Image (cartoon, rainbow, N blue to C red; front, side):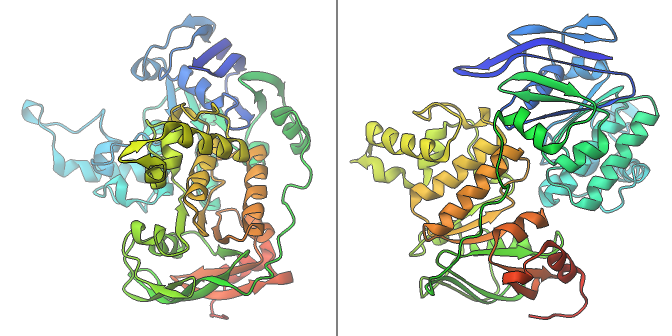
Length: 497
């Protein structure tokens, strides 16, 4: 039904695709797997008309086609849910959903009164009842934005659905919803290309899969076990997926939170020692995100105290957190919207908080800046030019995450708030990030860690605080820190701090 043959695409010095090929059969769910930067997203953008390939051919139903734009792709029956959200953030949910089919009356004027009802009916037809049609995307959770993006694409009734990391921000229940939509789409005659870094999802959903490495397809199989897939994707065998949990022997408390309250938080208290990785667990949407944003000053607390390095600090904005003695830094879940300045270079994103350190009389000493940036790029194994001149938006998701972490290492922050940092990251890069988190703890950083993957929280953290309805309901430590215990504490009815 769809075939890509010998597709190549470069971004300056970086070869994103180097002769990649794959084919999609009618009624098939075909998985594309590989490390971040292997070329999966670039290939989907080529098929969707977002990027022009340097060479290669695309065939649709046996006929060669040229896809110069997303509009042409839609006319050819290709519907894409991109890894980066494409919602118009200043428009309502209804306007985003019905943009190409707005209800109009006399003179072609939009009938705004009908917008909300029609959008609600569309959402309901896909089993979505929780999204307000009159809300704007910026006020929705990242997961709800992703669901809106998926429904908008499905509503256009494509014959081929291209899903690029659609589950990265979804909860387990929402993933089940998506898989039900995909199976219904296939039953109705559609074909699907699906990418995910969660191997269990790939095993559950796809009929065949193609493995990518360094911009090339290296294997196409109907079935593949995870260990063999890792070898094909990375070219190396990984040892234990998780590094040993470092032991926090210091009694030096770097961060203490005392009865912090807000519209969402209900008297949250805890402390983190030097060298400790403290996990924040619980079901999604129980106040974890608000806690991280409040500690970083991106949300205002209504009460309580934050003590950094033994001194009480007023943190009302991110600048206060960054400058709070030892420094508090946040690596957010949405690296593109909340963390990085995408058009700028890797170097500029790394040095953003401390650019004054490299300046004399207002002039930046570029040689000194490049030296520090080069050392950090080598330490974190960021796949980019050593000078960091490459635009950060051209990096893979995992490498962008490394840039965000590197920024705060360069700034000297001692308290790191790591919020779902492996979301949308491949197996090999996850392994690298796990090692990095353990190394940062061993180097004396205090780390507060949240992940939508309970296994990550259980395997990386010495202690876990489980949140429910904006408060801590259970503390697990030592042998208690098991995935099953975290899940059990997340759904219990009584607080047991």
